[in-house]
Image (cartoon, rainbow, N blue to C red; front, top):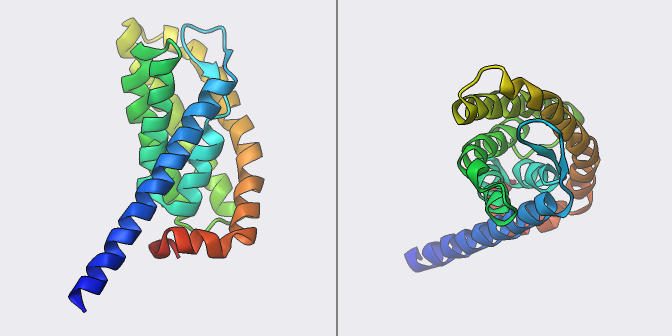
Length: 182
């Protein structure tokens, strides 16, 4: 009996790793796919938060943290934004964790909107602090705030209906991929 439980836990771990890997890759590619510089000292608008928010909402806070931090930091490393990778790893990792924490694998419109608004605050604060250190100025990072707001707003407008659709239409698949998610 003990071996059966261990085998089940290993399957779950492999499934969870696979889900993290797929969504990390999607986040990286979506971040790299469309990058519109905001014109500020640093930063861009991209669509990488869509798979991040989806993973965090459907598979939880730990998955969200890994997918967000690693996926976007990897994108930074691959697209010439390498100096930003540590800031991205920490800030977007926290964003994924917070999004997953708020939604708690039970995506409703209210939870998704609340999560989106909260991660907007995390993003603005995280990148503001990171840029303050990077540029040695409290004023320069202010220029990035509008781009950060646009990025989260656009991604949320797209991600929220996608998450609600996937949750309702793929509920059984999601439960099979990560049994503890339900």
